[in-house]
Length: 109
Image 1 (tube, rainbow, N blue to C red):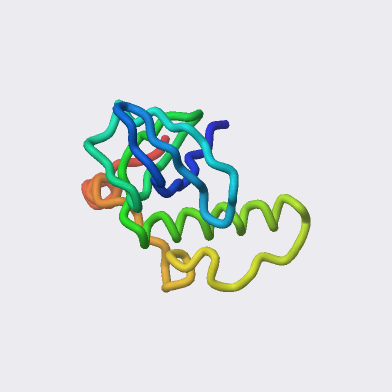
Image 2 (cartoon, one colour):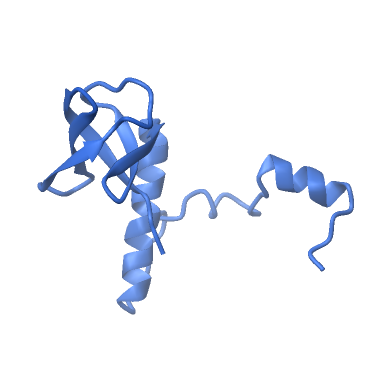
């Protein structure tokens, strides 16, 4: 399984950026050739050393929190409240395209 990691851009040079993940000090070189122009301070969703898309800061935080919660659960510990904030705000919602399909009567079988 491949999981995207939110990373903040520190420096940009051509099609490469030096980035750091939330709470980490290790710098990583990231290929940015698949995304629009980025600047220091921007957030990227990174898979296997390549940026796949630019993130807003709040989305990067939500992804980081969800990854922390998954790590806590995998270690057998209690998951801190608030790390899955989007799920704790009431009933989970389907993405718009799936909700439209559900309302149109689509089934899974």
